[in-house]
Image 1 (spheres, rainbow, N blue to C red):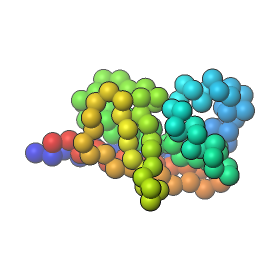
Image 2 (cartoon, rainbow, N blue to C red):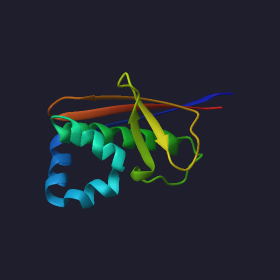
Image 3 (tube, rainbow, N blue to C red):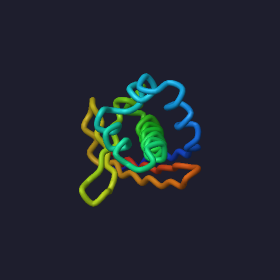
Length: 120
């Protein structure tokens, strides 16, 4: 039997921008992998993309924790990567997650994400 678990998150871009300005690399290194930082910093408006990644990490964390297979997950363990077509996908450092789909959306003010985790 396949079980479906979902997670969603929304964050104000200004909150992420504030954390980047106040804490710099200390904040970024605590939450984001080097690969995520390279990608976001390569964009014309990095805070928007950091906020999108942050929301996606929170959405994935909620979906995975809801499944009961995990007891704790740090945001740094969750890496949001991109396929060549731009589609986001999950890299989770400790366990192989067979099926987790992610959707990220953002405006200048907000970033939101949705994660769908299927467990057989």
